[in-house]
Image (cartoon, rainbow, N blue to C red; front, side, top):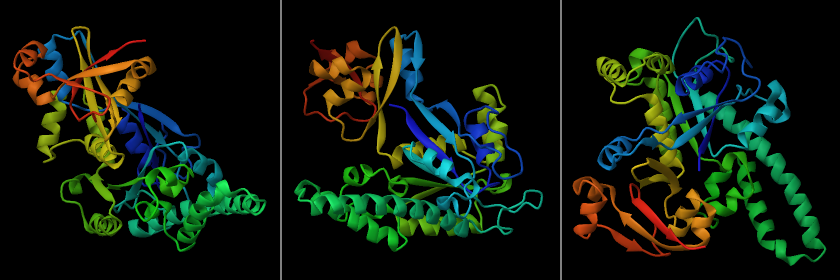
Length: 366
């Protein structure tokens, strides 16, 4: 499975510059005017994972196949987007197709870059975007609610549970709160997700700052951190300009030296991917052999047969068992042979939940 993240925000907050850096491309025009990105630009980038190199070295693997993350640069939303302002309807439809929303907020002053509302206020910017998403969802729920009520009145009792859910969501949206706030309050994530609402999607707030503030942040980022703490959400600080500079460096060593020179431990890309995986409860397991080392993305709590199905549906259908070695055991034993000899390889059945870093060989029979 490939994680798909939509990059959203008001015009001129640094979205397209960030997208270009994250995907090491110039596919998105980074011009200083609204709607420079009219069609969503999509880029695929590797999920950084140091474990792959170590596994490949030990196994003598011919190649490494990492996990990937897909970024979609969605053109800048504006106030009134839910009513079609600024090509809003088209942009909102693109957001429906992503797994998570990366909400880029401008947290820097720069007289050379205009702000669509004339003043730098990321809290207000965040409120504008969320309000537009709530209004769009409210319109969608109103339509579904009317149709469901009509069918229930005709005697279709199978829709009572859906009607209750729609009414609860409608009340929440009407109060100005996102649909995801209903999760855990009598309704689970699956029920809410099936409604395909914009505000049900998890959000990561990305605070875009000047280069000199990438380590420390500023008053704007502190305000966003306070907001996300109240919402039990998450925010990270990046500088899209720094990311653009890093993207132009060719060697890993150059990137390490550059980060060290400015006091950063990791790139913004790495921070975004880690936070996005955490946001969606995602982890990685590995298949290892002389031909290749392959990283596979799965949701926390996935059972072994489902994990096998991520590789191929036939693996899930004919699942017999999984031969599992934890990453740490594989490294300490320097490979599969010693892990078997020391009893570190386990045979797991259908009830086993795959763990992050597991090296797995699936046995199946068609």
